[in-house]
Length: 264
Image (tube, rainbow, N blue to C red; front, side, top):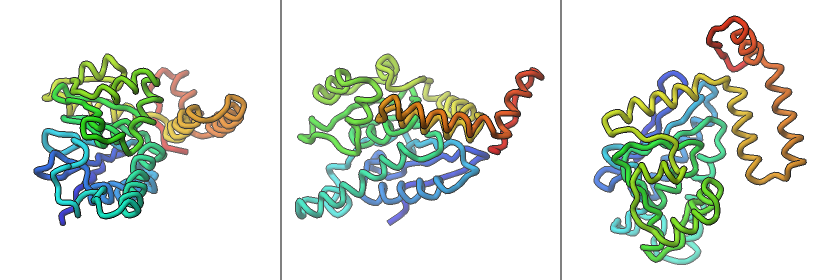
């Protein structure tokens, strides 16, 4: 079967594209295996500073393909034990996307629902084309949700909004997603490539060691008590203060020029 995830790298930005032809990039067992393989390779690439996740064609990812043959699905109905093992393995993909050291952007070019929305929520930042349509979708399919979507959305928008969107599923457009705080910026479909390039380039221009440390701070803030967080924050702050990039940032500020960061 053809690979369902492709990756291209231009300078410091890796673009990871979900590609399940004819299925609107629906989540299959292979798509998630391919995605995990690609993310694993990118994690180890110190030259990649930003990872953008998008979909091929006119959809981002519509979630699980309920019409697919059982052997192509994660939940195949063969046994509780087998389905549990497959879904637990699949869940690691969303966790990997969320925790990977690079900054991540979900570039939502079209329909984004169910498990596809969960993947988008795992990213650090989400941007959307005006053609994008969102839906949690799970309850309409008689299911409670997977790939951490409720966990991510609760932390992004709060418990009340997560309950609203998951318990009262329905389609909403990109502008409503921006009003909710689900996405940070919306462009026309024609200008979406330009928006994606601008956002990823801005993230890639940041001091890479500081950006990775800041991401660790942001992740830790979700779970650590304040006292523990402050200790870890101090350690990261001091380590970054002693880098060449920090000295370059200070010099560039004094010289009124743009800094050039090398990751040292």
